[in-house]
Length: 449
Image 1: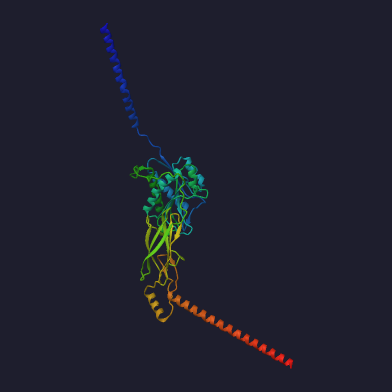
Image 2: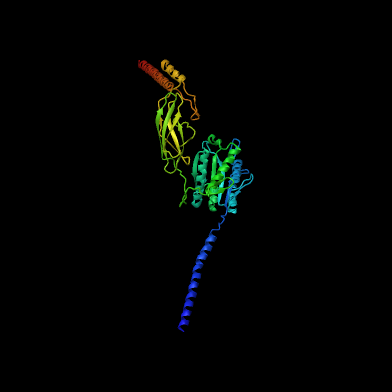
């Protein structure tokens, strides 16, 4: 009996011990199976983007010389689409295929209908005074749309600068209802659709003309825009032999409040004349300007106290103080003043600096000597100031002084003549009065007799 009981006990122990080994191996087998499942690559859904060539149909957009914006944006959009389709993992649509107008709402609605991840609005620019130049990107001022729009715009703007265009910055703009000013951005934000409005350059400015004045250059804009999108999404292309999978985007936080534009003028604008070359009229000026809410963008200068100004000049990026040289025409009595502009085209006028008259050049110097020796006035001016791009006519300082002296002499002579005439009139009246009094006295004497 004891042997039988012992055999039974050993058998039970062996049975359960073996079972525990079997069950203990099961989780490891499950983990191995799970690991094998995780190694199967999951294909990402393609990125969907919509390109919106601005204007169309009767809506021509900007027109300058032989250029019309609606045709230019379509050329850029087609080139951009063709370039993007060389990348893997992206689907591209156009809001319009032909020359037709669409409302802003229709453009956004189309993008939503194809489940777009981003809407890229393609445009060209003009300014009221035809003086602005450079590229800019407008984005929504709100939430995720700002964060995504600004991140893409940072890539786009860097590439436009590499092309040679001047950067007018990445901006927001609000209307009187404190919503996005540009309708396409406003409607996109209302539909939770990230968007960016790209103003590639200004059609009415010579500084930008070299970037858009041919079909090939417009297509170059399209390729650039497509590359910016590829970098933003980290795309790769076997056809092009590029991989932007490791491209690092700028980290832009999601704002907790609307990102409002700067609607004030620059806080500081001060000038100081550093050098005056009396042989050629070159004046070197140090300009210090700063805006506490945005960056500086342009400056312009004047040598006639602000009557006329130069064209807008590029500000040196990141600098608070810059130096520039302006040319003052011979015979001018200079009054130097500068306007400094911020990112939103608001400007502050500097202090004024007066300089002595500048006379230079062989002809002008000879005339100045003759005027000094002979007492005759010389007329200087009428010279074109090529560096400023404006024409000003100034009289010689000696001529001005002589004219003022002659004017004073005429005034004194006239004054003396008037006094003499008045005295003469008073004398005549006095004499006539005395005669009348004498005559009446004689009559009274006769009556008494």
